Length: 640
Image (cartoon, rainbow, N blue to C red; front, side):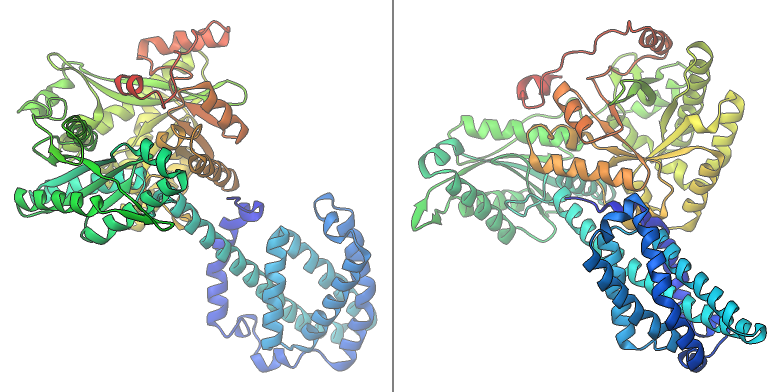
């Protein structure tokens, strides 16, 4: 899907919408210019109209001579037939303007002209320049041909008519742009969140829904069931009936799931013949077990295709929150283990995960340990480089949080942050991360001559807090680093949840300081083009789930390309996260993606290793990045 090149002006046009709304509210602009609708519709005096009509062909000839001299527009007027047609249309148009004939016919023509300009890629600025070219020369004709007093009155009246005309033209242009962006937004939503074959949710939407279900269960104190489904011996089905029949089975299976699940449940296709289901808020374990038995019965019925009956069964693995895990990854992993257990026991059956999640659950009282982690220096930030894909130059680093527990070892943020964010410790942790990131930035500038930026993640607590701007200003002042070198990252969901205007004010204040704003995990939440038009975003971070699939999934490649183009059109950098192979990096280079981040370039580096690593890069002696197998190598990718 191609984003139109003219969409670089969509922010300008969005600002124009407010002005046009006010204009329309005042009688289509008639009163706005100090004249009544009747006065403007009366048009110019007949002799003035004749004077302008006589001069107009010569002025239009000059206009098209100017257009031919502009390389970007010359192709639009390379045919004499086209030019003659355009001149006839413009002569008729200006005659209506001179007469003040702003009727329904005029409005329909203005809409068609605006759409034509948008589709042809004519910049609104060029439209304004062309309009000004004609009006300014017509004013000269009035000055040269009429007595001074009458010329002044005619110019004032003509200026009002011309202003109404250009406002209508820009209004039509904006309307065409708005329709195009609505179409693009709908297409992006469909590509990003739904499977094209089954119309079920895809892995990204499933992961988001599962996180929401777990948060709701945490608040309400109920359970959530996670099911992993796999079609038994799907390869033999494809070999025996053909790949077209295999696609039919996948599509019909998706329909059956949709028909027999509740509205609150979510079914998703997460792989070739792999499906997953979220079942929140069931009353008892027995109800959940009955649901799984019903799914087995429904999916075991034969499918019909081309007059043939196709027999197929599924195996199901189940895990329950919070019994079998506290995080989405742990629950899915345990449901997957239960699925393999079902397959090993004969297939066409359902198995529950047996055991508890050792990794998912931290020991009781661990929050007290976290409180002591500040004094005991157990918290640390590691820094993963962000590299320009075209030149290989290090552009910046992302600061990533780690907790080195004396007994449990290194603990990643996904295990402790969900609980810490709901505790008073979050404010302290957020301030600590901001200070450490700025101190590291000052150290790199002094020791390695680093001129790039460091990205620090913002939490919901920080964004909601009124002291965000003051905290950033304090950290920058204490560390004596320029604001342009600090980037603040936040997720789509955090931005969408903040509905108050104070958030926008805080972000705009930070932008005025020079701090840049990055939108993390872009494409996995629900940020729309409307949000992007209102938020001061400098960087879009393409989520690693897209990058992992771009070498083997055409849909993932189209989505990645769309995000890269969108970033270019709104003048925002795009950082591809999770780049692990040279094949992925090369595809992103061809897409003109700005930056890459991942193991293909470097592991996250400890604070003490970053200056030396930068100096080694500057001299061409940086260690080679780790060789990583492609994501499709499932057993090794899982262990990594």
